[in-house]
Length: 79
Image (tube, rainbow, N blue to C red; front, top):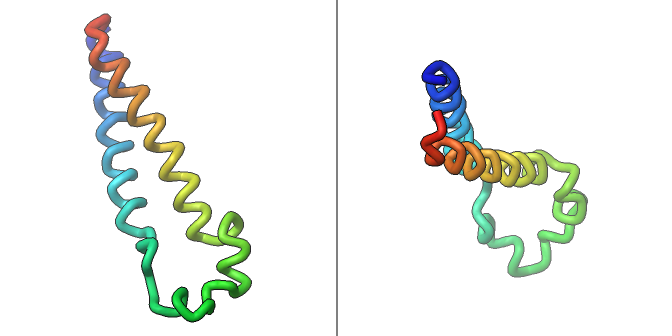
């Protein structure tokens, strides 16, 4: 069971690094002053789910859930 704990710890560290990188790659909610004048209603603003920003948000949510699940599994002390 010690090998499984080592593997889960390595997976946990990789998820942590990926999560940090994804969060740093995302734009802030107030990125650009164009949103004040309505310039956010462009093609990329309307189709955010299909853009790179939408991909980053979706991947961040998935990795956050995996982070929590692996953290709980590692703290069960079953291994």
